[in-house]
Image (cartoon, rainbow, N blue to C red; front, side, top):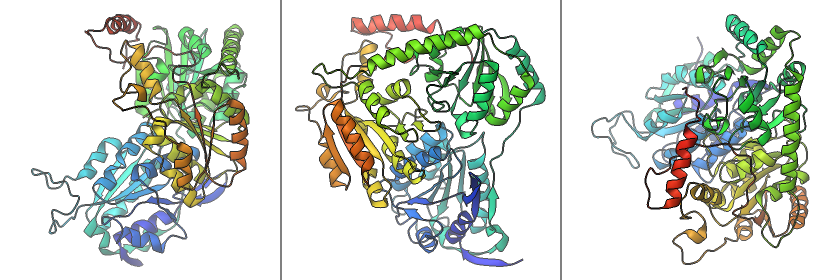
Length: 614
């Protein structure tokens, strides 16, 4: 057997460079690039290997390890998990900076490969700089922290171990049920070691996404249950998009007359005006979708993990409603006593469609949903109306302007703060697959970096990122990254003077405004950052506007620019779009504030409506 002698680091890079997949019928690299910040734990060996392979596996330097990994997550979502970015960091704080982003990828079932340095396997130099020592366990390093936020985790202590580890990592990244981040720590001295690897280990391999089918007996049970339904409802989750099952679901819902509502991750599988689409469901949902959810008797939950923002902390549904959970992940399919169909979304929907034959739901139920959606659209239009009352515009009004100016193919990103709720409710999707609201981990800072990653995913479209001033202050350095790399996005900064949506929650549960809006913090006086000057200092083009007509003109200008462009606008901190479902959060059992005690009583009453289950 022919051998190739190379270092462990060189072997890792060679292996990754020979993994391929298909996107829209074209053979492309499975790993199209690496986000990397080098330090002493990865620069001399892994860096050396990446430099030699940069023509086939390009490396992009970020400004912060966390934001690089956010960009990788944003890329994976924009590519609907068909291609995967690699992230490399040194050791110690460089690596632990990745933890938050790994949490995002793990929660939202998105693939990212993290390859980081680790302590010396032979331990002779110990303790080395940035090594956290555990006195009772010398094998433990900070890399062990990633076990909680990784789908696959390994530490390489011998060169030959990568021959079993890397294929398992790739299999995890591509598994529709177990998909999520893979972490591999490579000891510094192991990175340098040379080994005679079998040549076939580096043979090019074409990967295809597996599409498991549902169990036939369970499928028959699901079909029989659905045929008894008087008021069936489909909840379309992120798994519909990752399976690229939009067209299959559209045909299923249309021919059987079943209304469709969407989760946060699932928004964008249907266009807003599709006749089967009834709006977003849950705490960030529409009155139309939530009305249907409350009255449905059989619910087909497709590709969703049914988190609390979808279920209204399990107060949204009738206690007698029955669930059919169609999901690639066993864990998700078995939630809340669901009838589990563990399968790929596209294949599962198609087989259920065929098994149902000519069966159709009651047309009056669908008509009820359409009438409720008409009322919801009227409400949204009213909230987005361009009126000037001498106050800062609301989020809803800003979103209405951006939505109107965006082309059908343009891509919108948000993640945390008040904008996710307003966008999920008010953004009218014009083309499937153009909406990214990262709300599984609800991670501030994801948005801007994900804009860089989504821009790297290509496609002839503009990427819009909408954030608040709080998120901008938390993570803005990838404005600079995008300018350096030439991957343009358009950033809308809505300055409402702090963390306004958390202030809203604080007040809603009886609390005083405290430490959220800048005016309620321990500061000498509130000060609004000059976001335009800051963005321009990083090479972006930028403009501040105050009126909605100025915003429309600024967006036209931004779309014509050749680089990342930032638009800043002050927005109202207390105006929100209604439609919310109930949410379970901790409210103090006793308090010196009467408003808190009243909120506690109301909250306890709300908990009585929760549906029991797991």
